[in-house]
Image 1 (cartoon, rainbow, N blue to C red):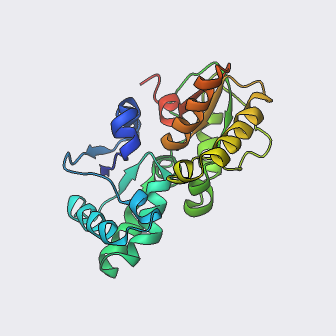
Image 2: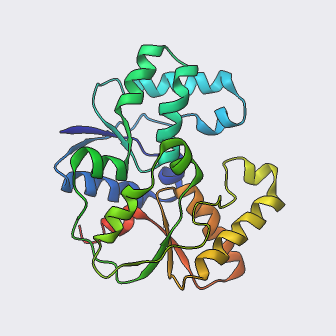
Length: 235
């Protein structure tokens, strides 16, 4: 199976290893991965800020960058959810429908489309999982990441209190409402620390960036890591 890889902005600019690890996982699953170097942002930050004009331009560019009728896989449920749910407001309905049917978050694709839940990974650490708002509420992702994590050798998954509460990122929310955002991040990290976990894991690099920034500022004994980086660590 040939799949197209969409690399979100945060991963492209700040976490390139996560993109490479996504490729490793897809290739291990038997996929041939195509990457279009002309791809850019899907337009989600602009759309969330009300800039519909530029959102339409980026949505059209996305369609041009991914013209084939084959799976588009991305290590971000927020981007995938945005494309699935909101492109119909921005571009031709037939083209939007194609993208809605073809765009998948990475763990959803691996579990539900390919049917692989064990990649032979080993990660001998206690972790807790952060359900990102957009992943859970817009995309509908919940059990798939946990299925994959339970098959990682040596990994202990401990659920944190209020695991599906927002981490305070919310895209431009953290800029517009910084004090509220920081308080929400503090609560999220305190809940994670209460489990004794060494790592906070998520599918969303943007959430992890926000959480890690708070951890660094407070010099706390916990780290963040993207799920793709755990699953691919033996590949």
